[in-house]
Length: 171
Image (cartoon, rainbow, N blue to C red; front, side):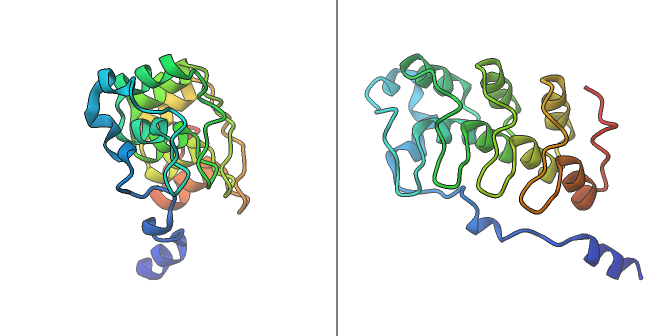
């Protein structure tokens, strides 16, 4: 009985391999390992086949040093999206990179930006079940009531996949 209940509670999204996070041979895939000195030779507008920019890879890997170096060359953090509509904050949140999320939010990343599925960065944190990341987003006053294309809020995702109540998560 509990097995069928758990199965009905979990209607998982598409396999992770179909999500916008993909490793490529694009030079930006190693952006976190090259250090800020080498960033000066990297074009901040170079996109790979998936529409990823160096800032996406830096956010995904959590490299705050590289994020800082990239921002010194191009300070935009909100309008740099990939083909699926992911901002650097989406990449950091989806990969549990709390320091990168905090850096991007301090730099003015908008917390209500939705990707093509209607997910905000907080939706990704809630889907991960990352309570400390959820608390970080709450401290920055991320909206909890934005619905994705399936009509789900971040709280709905946290409850559905992890049984968590993000409203009760302390800031």
